[in-house]
Structures are given as C-alpha cells and as structure tokens.
Image (cartoon, rainbow, N blue to C red; front, side):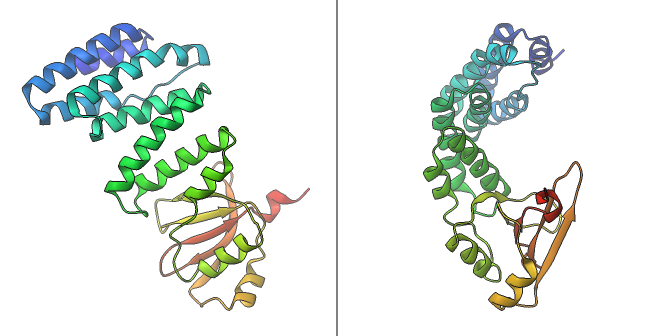
Length: 243
C-alpha cells in the first residue's frame, strides 16, 4: 500500500495523529527527492478535505490539517500553491467550527494568492472570493464583504441593471459561476426582479434576455442574462417569494 493510500485509510478511520505523522514523513521524503515529487505528493494529500459525522470529529481533525499546512509552508514555501491548498483546507475546518479569526486570516492569505495569479473571472478567483465573503458575513463584517463585491466584472450590457439595483440599496449576496455551461459571471441580488420593466426602463440591448429557472435540488432564480457574454443579474424566483 502506498503512503498516500495509508494516510487516507487512517483519515477515514479518524486516526488523525497517525495520519499526520505518516503524511509529513511522506512529504519530507518527496521534498528530498525533487520539487516535482513534492508537488505530486502534496496534491494527493491536500485532496482529502474531510468528511465528518459531527463537530467533535471535525474538531479532532484540526491538528492534522494544521500539521500538513505547517509542513508544506516549510517544504514548499509559505506562498506555494501546495501551502495555499492546505491553508484552504484548514480555513474550511476552522470556519465550520466558528474559529473565525484564524479562518478569516487564512482565507485572506489564500485570496491574496489567487488574486495575484488569476484574472477576476477565473473560477478559482470567484470561488475564493465567495468563501471569504461567507466568513466575513459569519463574523458580522458586512463592510468587508461588500468591499469584495465592489467590482463584479459584469459586462457592459448588464452594468446598468447592476447600478440601478445598487443605487436602490438592493443587497448583492453572491457573485460567481453557478453553472458550468453558458455561464460566465452571475450576480445574485436579494430581491424579485421585474425583468420586463428593467429591460424597458433601462433601454437594455436586445442581447439581454430573461432567464427563468424553477429548479428543485439546484435552486431557483429569475433575472437577466447577456446572450453575448453569458453574464447574468439574478433575483429570487417569484414563486419562491410568494407567501
């Protein structure tokens, strides 16, 4: 059995101390072999993000995730992709346990790392921004959350809609890529949008069309989509908002 397989087996058995020891031994051997080998082993180790039945088990895993993070900072460098992947894992666990100060500090490091390396419409940027916004809001820091949404990156065809809603104080609660197909950047506002009225009142281009999705497990929304850039401004679905 390979070292990685042994580590995963120990993790799945909740033997976190043994898993940490074996994982760090494997990382050190890989680092002694080559940077490429370290990257390969680190990628396999950080792929395990945790599957827990309860918060007690989740809390018990923290030393493991912290040990992997510390080891990768030392071996790969504090700003390496491997260390940042480990930081992402640790931040997720700490956030779930309401250890928000440290979770936010880690998420801010990861987001700064992503910000320097990827454009604002890259899925990795969008995902990390949402993760940081989530923690800011858990901590009651709406100003910091709003600051991350100062620039959504929406195309020029939908910017009038965004400005109109922002000017009226409509809360923007998410910006990301909810669908993998035909979806670039979608901004979700906490309101039911009168799409027909918005198109007429703002004189929107013909490329802006109404999107109406009444989902089940995958959620619901109604809003406007640019058929050129695949950007969207979404609101709550009227049927969900009905009393």
